[in-house]
Length: 331
Image 1 (cartoon, rainbow, N blue to C red):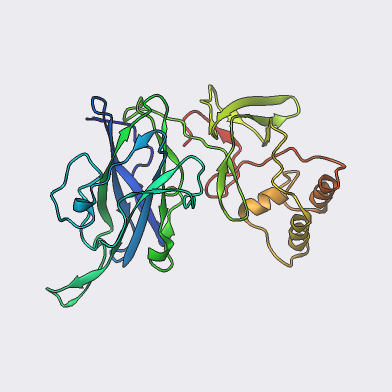
Image 2: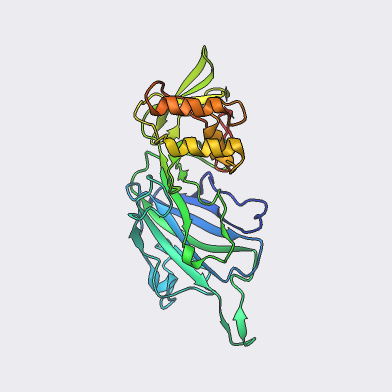
């Protein structure tokens, strides 16, 4: 097997209250089309108590064959290269899981994945000490290797993770990097510099939807623009660094519902009744001046009644920070 480029490598540390899922290795056997992802967990505590993890994937590019007699109950020996291998057995919840499930509920908020495999763990009674054993018992653990058969070797394959909210330690969540979509490209090797930029929008339910096949216009000023194509939300490889103040979409179908409620939020922020933060504040600052002002309220009202059309969009990253430059190694 050959190692591939790892799009979700282990962070140097995990922030307080954050659970970081990472890939230790990505391995590919071209003769059998076997793709193996080695999944790990990094946290700031040794006792998470319980944890449920879904690995989402695009079923049009890979297939999954279960081996739950090993991975779920250890009633049979591990069939290497099938289903889940080398699972962290401490605390495995054996009632369900380790099988392919349709991603119809869209737990990962991605339109690029179609199915998932879920695994759950929980603290268990340690007969030796006569007490509940902390799970997982370490801050860095290898959870499992999971195997897929690649059915489409020509295009990158979409994956992602989500947590079972019913099995999360109170006050904890997956890190933003852990829940971000990623792709496995069979052509890329370790050490390759890879651009990984997806562009989408988030609705009121915090579901992120990638834009379709259209172009994004990066605007520096009225005379300086650069148009870059998107394919299923992934930005084409940039040939040079791009600096911009805002972006515009070539498609006129995207509006994302500017309404009177947005005007109310602007006014409440201006008079100090409430405070807009993060991407809400960036979106409310229509003219990009750095603050929400009456002129921004007027722009929204003119858009709502049809006197003007707001075409400018702010680009923010997964931490809600404003993005004004990109390059070919941006992840």
